[in-house]
Amino acid sequence: MSAASVEWGYDSHNGPETWPIQYPQAAGEKQSPIDIQPVNLKTLKMNKNLQWKYIPEQCEELFNTGTSWKVHVNGKGSELAGGPLEGTYVLEQFHCHWGEKDDEGSEHTIDGQRFAGELHLVHWNSKYSSFAEAAEHPDGLCVLGVFLKPGNKHGELDKIVAQLPKVEFKNERLYLTEPVDPALFIPEDNGYYTYQGSLTTPPCSECVIWIVFKEPVEISQEQLAAFRNMKSNPREAQMPSNYNGCVRRNYRPTLPVGQREVVEAM
Image (cartoon, rainbow, N blue to C red; front, side, top):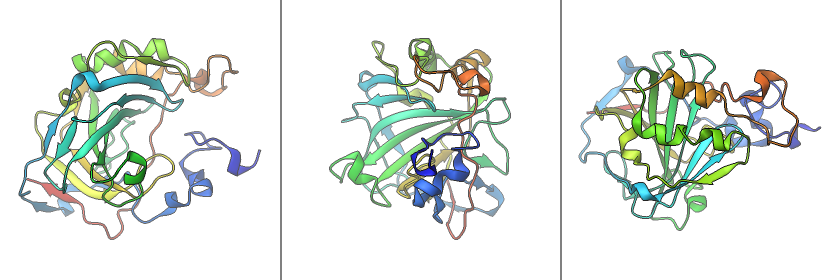
């Protein structure tokens, strides 16, 4: 099988080191995630507070992508504005990254420290006509990154976790019958870091204004285990040999910050 026909993933034959072969942007100079080093940062008082308004009933479909779980949002009216953003951004989907153990899993790191997971809420700039068009522009997307750490069960996230056994295998999906409020994923302490970067999965387009919250939220060991038990193969396919087909790690290593400015919002 040629390199160009290998489906991307997180194993040695198709993992992040190989992505630039098929997706040239993955070798760019504004890639994500990064290691955030607070001691080096410029602190800015934002003119406008970050504001969000989400409609729980718009979280429509839970999907196993083969690399993660993802919730599609019919997002008109579920919006993000303020902070470093010009205009209004519409929620498109949210998904998660995690690791095999509790000391790995987040994509961004703080002074080299990883968390057990990282939740991403992906928004697109409403001045463009669609998510696809927005993803072609540097100000097209905004992703909220929320660190996850082991602790108490997360009640709102549990509405997703409870459904994961029904989408255990790749390409399985279901419609959510219980509303899910993404606002409840955001830490009570709304301090954050922001910088210009990319999608952390192929095609790794450099179109993302990142807002990474400083404070992690807690999820339980049982919830983390449910993530790690998801399967990367379709139900009818042969199970991969590693991890018995389970998605045990799905995070991209950090990339150089380069000439980019990372700002700590006050």
